[in-house]
Length: 423
Ligand code: GDP
Ligand code: IMO
Ligand code: MG
Image (cartoon, rainbow, N blue to C red; front, side, top):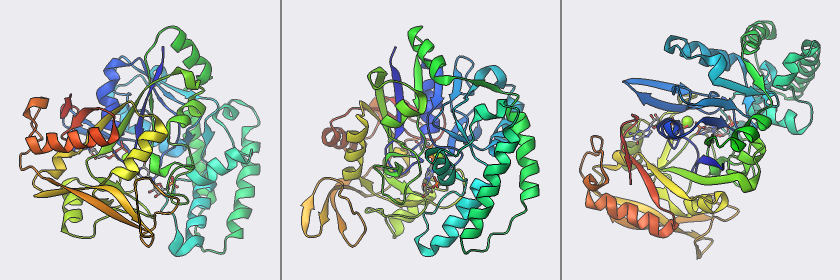
């Protein structure tokens, strides 16, 4: 049985959490493969809004097993808070949530290093969520990291101490003023590790291999988005993992020839949190309206998201890199009421018209070229059937499908589970 993927195609926050929750009824296993608590995945049902950071978005369904794969980085402190938030929902976490022994641990000093690195960059800062993601992946690739499986060894605290001491020396290397009380951070960390150790650790690649053989249906849940990919995103303004399809192979131990559907998810417009180039960004009333109506604030940090028109050049690039087989368009409801809508179909790049994403997309090199489309007035939030969609929205969708050469299978018209139209 093939493993399906669900990936964000923009700069994150496309609505992955909502769609994974919607799709979970058709799957036996939901598995996160990269990223960490920099992610904030929101899902809503029965009038309750949930935000998950590390725990897969299938956790509210009886039928599905949830796996945190080897490619994920886990902060025990944030993980404990997530578990605490779930307590009132009576979920049997020990049997519904499995954690890879090969997943790496975020230590308190990783978070401090993140803060020191950002402070040292000054104006050139990445706009990191400061969850310690970069430093933890640096230790992973530098072969210094601590893994979940280490917590099962008697000497894990010694390993912890050696790494934390090294980090403290590194923090001193940055010439910035970072205030912290490591003793406090450590007591919180050790308490959280204790709780983490009460969960089930597995060799997840073996578990998933067996599950595939048994014909189990598996959905891999991406975090962040393709334009934040460490290799293919807007480097250096990216996250520190492969958010694209290949990341699911390395982050779960799934072979490339075992990947099935690649579900790509995008907003009907574009948002970005943090620093970095964003060619279609708006600084006018239209951008302000998108932010207000779309409630565009980061689910992890609460920062306002930058908003702009849909960028088809960037979206095509993401479709191509990931081999997307079906698309999901989110937040169409937010565009109701705009008289005219713009879609960027090409860039003016240093005087030439180009239709691919170049190496350098800073504003001094790239100006978006737009196609204008009619807007629609209809409130979409109560619609349930594709026949009910207004003609101008259908024209918008048709245009995108033609340009991207991939069908749009879901149109989302609100944050709730039920506000989902299947085409
Ligand atoms: P994720 O990180 O990709 O899971 O996305 P986030 O949860 O960070 O951000 C998406 C936000 O949009 C959340 O607040 C969702 O509740 C909300 N949302 C998802 N789909 C829709 C939609 O179709 N319409 C509206 N208005 N909100 C949506
Ligand atoms: P989800 O999974 C949106 C952004 C940060 C920053 C950059 C690097 O909810 O879509 P990091 O903390 O990784 O060092 O931050 O990446 N970023 C996200 N933006 N959604 C996310 O996750 C993000 N995770 C990281 O804002 O610009
Ligand atoms: Mg998010």
